[in-house]
Amino acid sequence: MADNRFQNRNFNRRKERIHRINGEITHHSVRVVGEGVEAGIYHIAEALKIASNMGVDLVEIVKDSNPPVCRVIEYQKFAYENKKKEKDKSAHSKKSELKEIRLSPNIGDHDFGFKVKQAEKFLKDGNKVKVTLKFKGRMIVHNEQGKLTMLKFAEALIECGTAEKMPQLEGKFMNMFLVPKKK
Image (cartoon, rainbow, N blue to C red; front, top):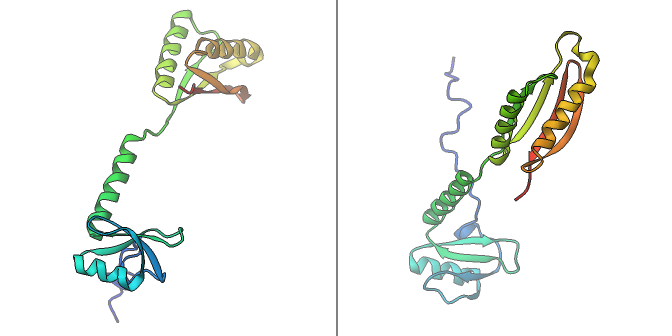
């Protein structure tokens, strides 16, 4: 019986490139740019000859234009720089998280102030805040008091956030979502 461990693996698989290079470019004429090259529109054979004389690649940068724009550059260096730029871009972008704060219908003033400060910090950091109010036992009968507490909480945070979704009762929980204000 044959060894099937390596059946699904393709070790000689070529990496998919984003840009077409050299012989992969199919257009008859291209606009050539790059260092040490006079920018202009050239026939593809002439552009490839210019690139090979310089010892670098002809890389199709903008394929949607007419004629497509190609740059005379070393492809490996170009790909490395693009990858580095993408990595830097993703490192500086912050993903917003959903933070949760729990309240009760008859929360004390000090606890309420503490929770407001916490939510304010989350909103200033650019995160969404889910405010959850839990009704225990027979408190559910007085859900108006819970709604007032939630609206008071939203009003205390009016400077740094707005209510995306107003308080809504779902079972024994009342939820409200706050999003940071745009700067």
